Image 1 (spheres, chains in turn purple, green, orange, brown):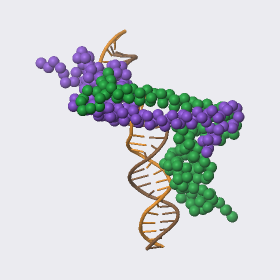
Image 2 (cartoon, chains in turn yellow, red, orange, cyan):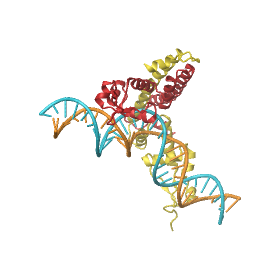
Image 3 (tube, protein in one colour):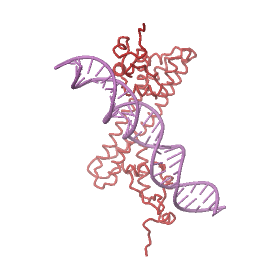
Image 4 (cartoon, chains in turn cyan, purple, red, yellow):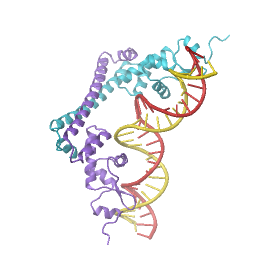
Length: 146
Length: 146
DNA sequence: CATTGACCTTGCCATCGTGGGAAGGTGCAG
DNA sequence: CTGCACCTTCCCACGATGGCAAGGTCAATG
């Protein structure tokens, strides 16, 4: 008397509190496309499947997906998120490790921000000197031309 | 009596003030790879060739490459540079058009800068609350976990 | 004149995160 | 039973750049 099939039907799986990929996507804000991508990249474990091959997700999977989503919102790369996930599930982690990752990423952001600000500053300076009328003379082009 | 072959030899071309791709790269700071890429993307015209198939560049080509390089340094995309180049070579351009492009790009940069600053701010705030020691408890991970 | 090393050619692959679309199977409601 | 919404896999695209491989060319040296 088997009460739980190895590969259940979808309806059966739903009764057990599992979600298919569309529901998981709606519940986490991660597109189905990206959920599959994260699986193939190893950020989330291989999803279990219904008999017909549909992926199934439990609440722990949704939790993991939300973790990934929040990390992406902070600009972490998939590689960095892989490390964060490993730390998250490692009960013997040192918080210094997490802090190091976060600060390194913050520093990298600062670097890029600085570069982009320099570009922006230059662009605005050049724009200030350009009349922006119907005439062709333009300090912006002059500068780009060297 | 033909003084200028349709497809000269390299030495002959050099005498006429032309450069091969390596020289053009060294003179402009654009890698040979990217010079070819810009050609295939239409940012620069198809280079003339020696009899053996080597690309040849004149000073005007170097000028154009430097224009592209400076534009890239300001963060313009290849598509935007295409537009800038068209304006550059259009003697009837309105400088307002150039100014509009530059300001739009500056605004886009500002947008991205703002997003990245928000990320950075959050990361630094979270880091401040993390002791960063050997213990596993970590507000950063707690936040990512939701 | 032959060899050699530096350089050129084209073409394909990789990055990184995301989306689009095609072709075919599944689930459910009317 | 039919139709629609959803699922599956697989391939392609973006943007800008680099790497590598296989093969041809040039110039200097022996």
